Length: 548
Image (cartoon, rainbow, N blue to C red):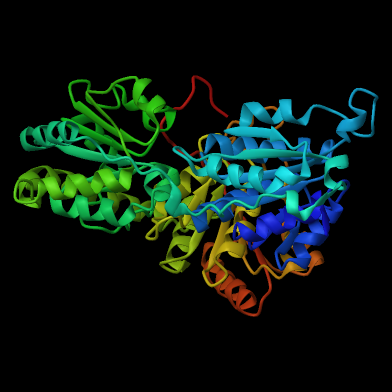
């Protein structure tokens, strides 16, 4: 009996537990896609390959395991690159499979011949070309391993057309034992490091925790909450890891974040990079005299820390378990009660001020009023995707998250256009959860055709657009290329077969959202186009020396 390369790929993916994949049809991958469907995998065909990679990104985050996207050779693969690069920047295990020109005619100017491997190598953890169909199961298994070992990230496998259609005897194929999350290396912290951390905790007066996506990929949300509650330490998260502990937890003081960072005498950075997102944990945003403890699975992260007093290479779930055991009888919530009381007071006063702004009845609608209506409308376990400029910042300031992995945004790469594809991928991964995408109008346009994907595949999400007529706020009308006009994206969505709403008054937002939810319940995607104030400019921490 013989199998060709395409058939082997489909069987290998099935053995790895893949249920869904995202793609656009095209040679030489057509047979791969057909065979995957024959193996029972759900195929979500999209309108742009970058959206396929972005859908796989959200799917992976929600499922906490690698996901798969595919593309045809040449432009198909180059279109994947933005989505794959975004996954690389966000440390997300997307497995990208690309067809390529026949290797046997390399250098002869074959159709769509270009070195796709060289393009993918800078934006993946690992990239490889397959030359022998018999090795496909081995290399797909390695792709899964590489994507999830240590710090997660995307990988790429390149499949020349002559490899995909070559027959090999089944007896020559080795089928490795499928990868599972349980097989990941989980190193523990050494006893001396745990003792050193405990010594700092025992003398600290104002500790804070900053956690990142490593908590999610390490499935350590339970351990983090247990540690926070046992020690009574105020906690903060990076934008991509919000909800790892519910943000109405008694030790969560969101609006006192700046005060906490400036005044902390012990900073515990757990499972996140010390990049621009947290200001490199550097002064003046952070106390220069604070002790900094860092725990990360990646030795390079520890070794290249811009500042660190105690650096620990360990699996975050294991290390938190060790700290919980070490704290028993030594550290309790009473230890830091006065510190939490101070943050709670700051938080309460700022929340009261914020509530007044959120209740803004002005027309055009202030984006914060839109955020309030969306936040009040969402289920507690809803998946919220936010993408844009002003609306991203306003949403971050005003909409809480209560469930791990259920908040996704433009990430540290700042990629515009991820919102709608992320929403589709999230709904495929979590079909029983409410999924809402809060989009800027500029960012929506980059992948707007995926509303058609929602309709064709019956993906009932709600997309809410903050329609401020351009790429960013522009109160002085001095930004070149900013204006897009107040376009009727609702009419476009309606033409595709979506439920659609156009809103100009703040009091009409909630009824429109409720009608959208009714459409979702009937299996229909919905779009709510909300006219917002083009002069409203969100304030946030400066990440660069320039602004948009």
